[in-house]
Structure formats: C-alpha cells, structure tokens
Image 1 (cartoon, one colour):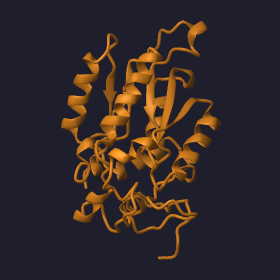
Image 2: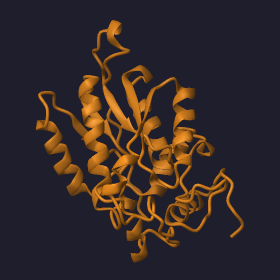
Image 3: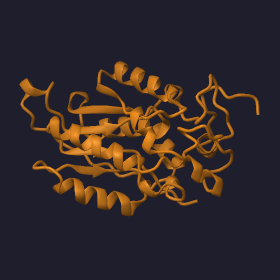
Image 4: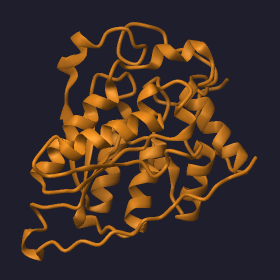
Length: 244
C-alpha cells in the first residue's frame, strides 16, 4: 500500500490579544472520535495556538453519545474553548439511520452495502452550516472537519466533491467568507492514525464504536476500521473491547 503524507499548512493569526476570548481563527467540528481527535491536534501542531481555535461538538441523538464526554474531557485538558450543542430536536426530520433510530447497528466493514443504514440524512451539511454560523460570530475564517478517504465509499457528505461545493457556498453565504478545511480528505484512517502516532497522541482519550456501551463492540463498521488502522500500524488499540 502506498501512503501519502498528510499535508501541513501553518497558519498565522493577527488577532488583537485583548480580543482573543471573543475572536478565533478556526472552528473545529470535534466529535470525540479518533479522526477528529487527530484533526484537533494536527491543527494545533501546524500553526494555530489553543486560544485561536474553538471546538464544536453536536449531540444529534447518536447512540454513541459517549463520544461527547470524551470530547469534553480532551478540550478541558487542552484548555480549548468548547461548546456542546444539543440539536436532538431535529431527529424528527432525519429518520432512517441506525445511528439515531431504533435500527440495529450493522456489523462488518464500511465498504459493505449494509453500512448505508449508518448514514444520517444531510448530517454534515447541517453540522457544517451551524459551524460556519458559529465561525462568523467568532470572526473565524475557517471550519475544519474530519472527512477522510475511508468515508468516501459510504458517506456522500465526506467526498471531495461535496467538500468543494460546501466550501464554495460558505465563501459567499455571509458577508464574512469562511472556508471549509479537510486536511484528511485524501487519506485513510490508517494514515490518519500514523499522523497521530507522529504527534504522540494517546487514543485512549477517544471513542469510536457506534454502540455506546461500556466497551467497544469490535464488530460495527467504526470498530472494524479502527482496529484495522491500529493493526496496520503495528499497534494494539488502547481502549477496551467486548469479547468477540
């Protein structure tokens, strides 16, 4: 397998220090999962300081809401501005996903056809729209989210063409232009984990499993892909798993 390097794009901020609590350079959609955890630290490592970013976590009624507590813990430890926004009321409009409805979480690899039940209708467009509005209020010029190459097969709202069009819209949707940044869009979870290893990250501070139980199930698509990433990098996942 050929692994391309994840690009770095250092940014500089010229904010007035007196207004650092009110203005930011970037908003990061941070679920508390493995990809967004790596993304958060990747952004910090490539030029932005903690006071220049704001993390945004959404409770949309996902069964794996356990990830929200992981996000809260990490942001508290890092001293990063963090908002958890409850948007569960929109679920009456978003039926049909096994992540939010009374539908069994499918097992197997993401590339399997049954994984389509994990698609939450229009999720990323909704979350990005809210994140962009938050960015405008903070005078931030960028919104980051962790779309990656491994998501392309199953999630239309993680594909490059979706990102390109959302970016174009967000450039003109407000008087202030906001760009959509996806540093991992061309990379697999294996490569994302490799970036995290380079940064010395502790993945016990993340939650990936779609089942929000005490231990990861090891069988859902999220778990299978996560375990595969650790195996391909010659590591053992530090989080606990249920007996298979």
